[in-house]
Amino acid sequence: MPGHAAVNARLAALFTEDRAAHADQGGSVYASGDDLLQRLSDPALSELFAFISQGVFEIAQTMNAPIWKASGAGKLQMEIVGAWYQIQNGYGFHDIHNHGNCSWSGVYYVQLDPEEKRAAHPQLGRFNGITRFYGHQLGLLGGAHMDLGNAYLQASSFDVVPEAGTLIVFPSWLNHQAMAYDGDTDRIIVSFNAQVHGERGDQAFGHGFH
Image 1 (cartoon, helix red, strand yellow):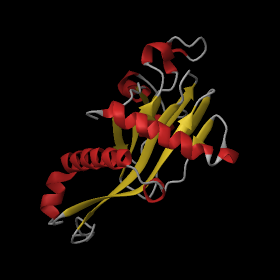
Image 2 (cartoon, helix red, strand yellow; image 1 turned 30 degrees about the vertical axis):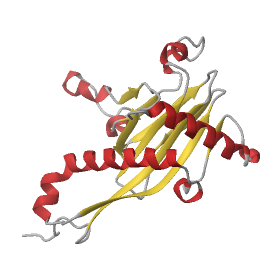
Image 3 (tube, one colour; image 1 turned 90 degrees about the horizontal axis):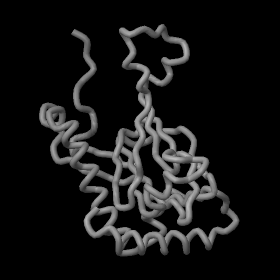
């Protein structure tokens, strides 16, 4: 995100203050409600979600443009249907999950220790605070026959090294987790869910059998 330093500093202060107002929900991982955009109003949030909205729509358009055109979907509208922040430290983590009620999800990194410092952690090492995504073939590894003909199935995960100011957009069905994090500064992220609708409805094609 261009000019993210000033935006991130404001967001970190805003979220830290908001969490303090809900001290009874403390611990190594704190997640706000998903009504962030309805509950908090701040120019930094508006700037961030303008950037997020543009990024999500560009990706959705790249993946779907031929289908949108063939279906006659008409004008498309992208809607953020849920957004929240998460503050993590002290070996806190978020276990494997995916997101429902949306087609695209994402995570924006607001703040965390620099990569070199995280990787030097004596216990967590280079996995300190990373985001790990899992391919759909993960469920096959336990019982599927494995030989060199399907060795590609062994590559079941992809690690994203977080960096402040970076936005990651992914299909909502993709399993992922925030690995354990421990650092001098809190790991602060913004997550969101998005839907894309056509002015003529969401059905691209019929389901007839011929």
